[in-house]
Length: 155
Image (cartoon, rainbow, N blue to C red):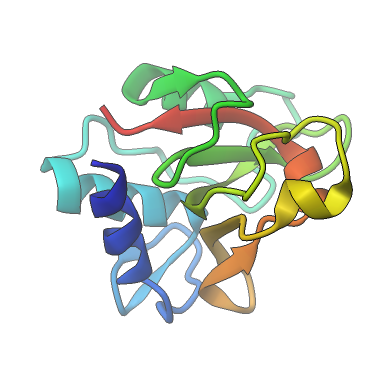
């Protein structure tokens, strides 16, 4: 399944960023990318998210995205990185986790936590929808790695 997830995610590269959308080629946000991949790989979505703002759940401090991921995806240990994983990021210290991506390549060394910075990131990459850029494949650099709070796989 992991190679199917990565291949499907790469098919979304170039899709413009559109808040709350999940339509390949037309527009999506980071959640929309994961929703679209679910439909491609598994069929009907198990849950349709309610309308949300760019700062959704921050005022309440609710980890809505994390809880939804736990309901529908299979949680993995953080160090068990593999292509095809859905990764959840906390973009700022003290804020809720609200960015998602799909790991497209694992690092050359599995030492995600500790070790030399170069060995942790060599070849690591992920696909995500980013405001102002659309769906892109980015290096999973140390600043991104530090923001990872959870890791999942599709069921």
